[in-house]
Every structure is written in structure tokens, then in C-alpha cells.
Length: 400
Image: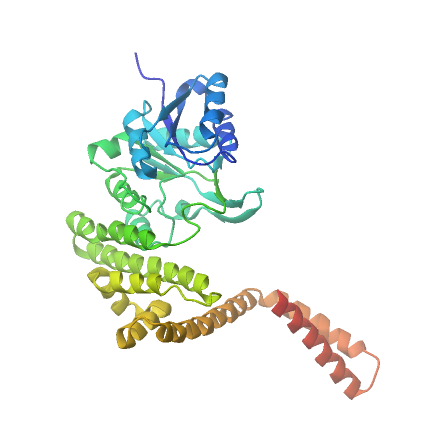
């Protein structure tokens, strides 16, 4: 008898009692027939009431299974167990504090069947806990016809490389021996390999995945472990790409890997700096670890040398650290540069925003000129009126 289960949704559970019900509800209420997919809940020794909530759903839906790790194994190992235990042809990973549109699985399975695809991507909406949307991203949609361009964007970390929000053929993992590593940033050494090996990939039109921003998640702060695990994940990329590509494609993808190193760690450096700016006692240990671990990474240093103009924060940080080391004095000097950098970025963004809408600006300018002309008073009074109006506009812009 042919296996009716097409999709296994893998839901790792750890310390999410506040969010788990919403996540499971979004899965139980999918428009895809329940016999065509299973919900695999995996408790990773959660210390709260998450398991109690999960057990309640076992009574409500027949397509739910609950497994328990013993001992705690972390997100990567829990996802690996989900792949091994999956009964479906495809796996879909969802974090237990996120949720889906109720048509997501049906739309993605239809796309996989029509295109005979190994991977189907959907975009996502980043939302606050109250449901307010911060950002919508469906950047894969425009890239899926050009595999090299897609890989460039993933390797350069210009588009998210997460395994969530993807329908992935289970055999891709098993056939090519691709597994999530132990530790943090477990997606980094996985997703690009899947895209390399997939025969065909496609995407759906709408963003169906809701990615919830919450305090206390493992990505809401940075430690030396975050940096160390990121370095491990990124280190695997260059050897893999050199093994699978050659010629012009290899050159393009190698450059993308170098960009990936720089973009990732400039973003992390921004985060560390923001955390440190308001502290009286600077976290020099984290700055020092960042410097010491990266200065010996050849791919990172090659990228920084080649693309230094595109990553000014990294360039300044390493120039200062190379000259006088990591100390309270040197980091104070770097943070002064950072403050100037942030101001320039802010005004550049304002300038870009301004240049994007010249028609709107000209329309407002014409309206303002008409007001000035109609204004009662002599020339000096009109000039005073214009100056006061400009001050008012500037104040409003600065507050915004």
C-alpha cells in the first residue's frame, strides 16, 4: 500500500509553553487533508508545561505523534531525530514559537507536485508576539530560476538561509548524509548544501510562515559560543563549494562565501557594539574573543581584505585591534567610529528615502510655494514664515 503521508512537520519543543498552542493550532487547522501529513512533536526535555500542552493535542488530532529526548540534545540533534523518524516524503521544520497560514502545506505540496521539486520555499513575516508585522520577506521568489544566483545570495547571507519555511524532500538529507550539527546556528552548514544537491527548486507566491520575535530566544543575545559555532558553520562552505563547482561558477560562489563571512560578522559586531555602548564596564572579553577567533580564519581575512570598503565597521575594528590590541582605550576609539558610522547610515537612509519620491517632494514644494505667495505680509515677514516652517519640518523629521 502506497504511503499516504506526504509531509512530516517537525516541531522541536523546549521552553515554549506560552507559544506552543498557537503553533500546533496553525498545523491542526491546515487545509491539507490530515491523512496526508503528520505533526511530529519532539520534546527536548522542556522544563516548563510544554509537554502537558502537547499531550492535550494528542487527544484532539490523530495525525500527531509525540516523542521525547532523553537527555536534552539541542535543536540540531532534535531536528535530525525528526528526519530519521519522519514517515512523510517531505519534511517541514517549524520552530515551536512560530506559526503558519492554514493553507501553507497544501499550497507548498501542490507546488512540489506540479514542478517535481525537491525544495519548495515560502517567504515569511517577522511578527511581534502580539501579531504586529515588523517585516515581510519573500526574496526567494525572484531568484529560483537562477540556481547560481540563488546560491550566491545564500552563501553571501543576503537572504535568510534558515531551513524553516521550506518543504524539503527527506531523501536529500539521507542520500547526501546532510545532518544538523550540535550547537547554535545549526542552519548555516546545511541549507546551502541542500540547494546544491536539489534537482529542482521552486517557491510559492505568498509568505505563509510567521516568524515570531520574542525576548529570551537563543538569537536575542550573543555569547562567545554564538561566535564559535558560527565560525564552525562558515568554515565548511569553501571546501564544499570548491569540491562541487569549477570555472566561472566557482569564482562567483567563492566570492559569495567571502562576503558571507564579512556580512555575518559585521552584523554580529554591530550587535555586540550596541550591547556595549550603554555599559560603563565594557565587555572586553567578547570583543577580544571576536578578534582572536577571526584573525586566524583565512577565508574571513581574505574577504575583509578584498571587500574592506563594503564592511567599514569590520575594517576599523581590525585596524585598531591590530595596531594596539583589544583594550578599554582601543574599544572606546572604535565605538566613537561606530557612532559616526551610525549617524552617516541614518542620514544616507533619509537621503535615499527622499530621492525615491521626487514627485511627492515636488508636489509638496509647489503647494508650499503657493502658501508663501498667498501669505499676508511684506518680504521680511514671508522670509520669517518660510524659516519657521522649515524649522518645524526639521524638528518633526529628527523626532521621527
